[in-house]
Length: 152
Image 1: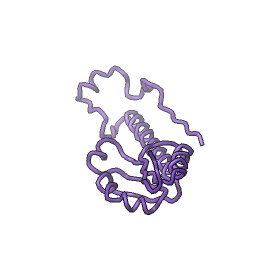
Image 2: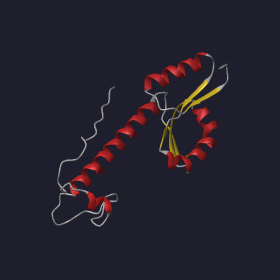
Image 3: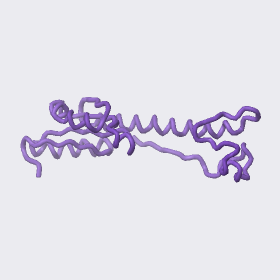
Image 4: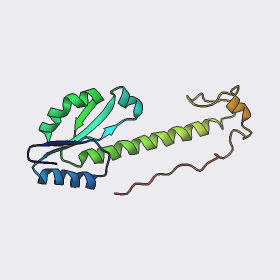
């Protein structure tokens, strides 16, 4: 269990209210708390290229930095507990917007009559996937566009 002087680094991705509650529970037992959610997927994790967003006890951040250096390429200290969760939400929102913008651009590029944009994942006309498609280039997408909602 938690006792005075023990150190606790929480690297989960949870909302701000939850991380503040966890920090309060740790501190109420005399522990030292640092939140450190990570940005990145499986490949950056394997390659030690994560971005780590820390907030809470600055001295614990300093103590944990050698571990963060193995896992990530950058570590940011953002101040009070909750700031890491907020920044992770910002980063995820920007990523979602970029993914949707790339999908839309790719979809629109197939409607250009004489100029086909070569986007990285667009099928080539000679590929089996493109040849087997019976859908005209400007037809409506097969699935509805994804939506995202945020609540604060």
